[in-house]
Amino acid sequence: MDKGLSLRQTEDFIEVAGIHTDIVKLGWATSFVTPNLKEKLQIYKDAGIPTYFGGTLFEAFVIRNQFDDYRRVLDQFGMEYAEVSDGSITIEHDQKCGFISKLSEQVTVISEVGSKDATKIFAPYKWIKLMNAEIEAGSWKVIAEAREGGNVGIYRGSGEVREGLVDEILTQIPEETIIWEAPQKEQQVWFIKLLGANVNIGNIAPAEVIPLETIRLGLRGDTFDHFLNLEK
Image (cartoon, rainbow, N blue to C red; front, side, top):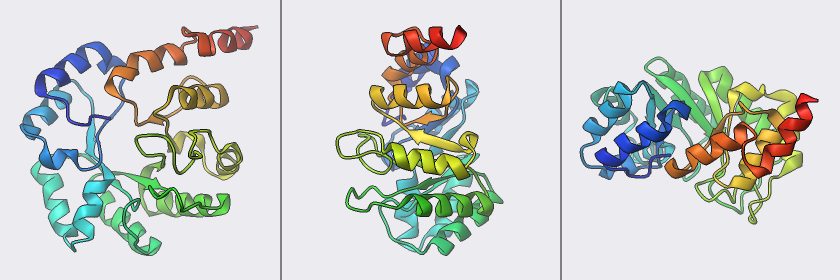
């Protein structure tokens, strides 16, 4: 997650961690206030790293009845991906799936399931229902919400994984279609131990990409023995 890197910081990030980065989200609506945005996006493009604007920007347009303006913004900046979410606004799920379907004709859509409101707790069956519907509507991947802090959605307020929820989701949704937001090290370790080194993990701070890669490879104490045991 890029929360406002400068052009020079973006270049430095790519030099150090670009090889370990599949896609970059410009967090929530930071792209709207980021200077030299086109230049930054070009740096990522030249490095072969896809980018997309955070779902909150989409929501900010939708709540103002400016969906078509949002689509024009995607074209204006040459975006090939877009995130559709409803973490900060309330919209009917059929309407959300309609947005996904329309945008999927224009870009590759990543949709986010779950609320940023810690008081909104979804039952596992509802997570599964929502994810399935969004995949059918045209989402390439679905994001399991956790916010930047990793303390809502698939996590309890303490940051602990809601293990039963994750297990239930995985009985119905293919793991390769899910991006698990996991900004905290303990959360990253948990998912890597559960699903392996190549699990899709999101909301990673730029400075944490290299540390995360060592966790994936069993080169940090947290997973050192785990991968040794798998090799036996």
